[in-house]
Image 1 (cartoon, rainbow, N blue to C red):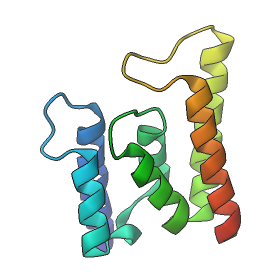
Image 2: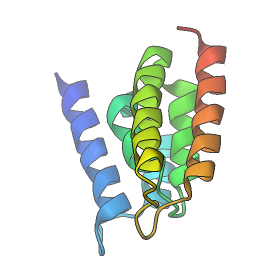
Image 3: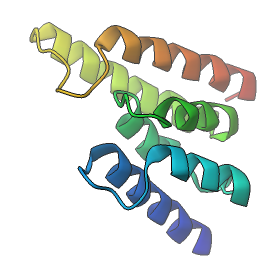
Image 4: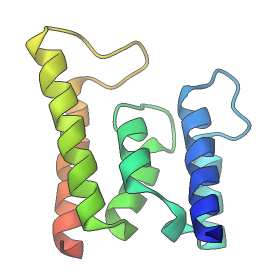
Length: 123
């Protein structure tokens, strides 16, 4: 239960850093803390991937790489499928990414890198 609480708190910090105008901590600081404290297991790929995939803030790419290297391959695949479906729907409606988000081509590139990492972990 404690690990679940840690995961929820970490997801809340990441969400705030990715979306709030003045977050308590930025993504780079969160990444450094995770590495320093060995909290990689607290990263929830299902929640974090969808929040960070379109994010172009400093630290987002490193956190995504960490999810790819240490996360559950199954969760990465599930979250990746959902992200791909969202992009497909947006492209079908000729929508552009929201302001401050990466273009869909860059998001797709990140997603492919995560799939590659998940394949190395194994499903």
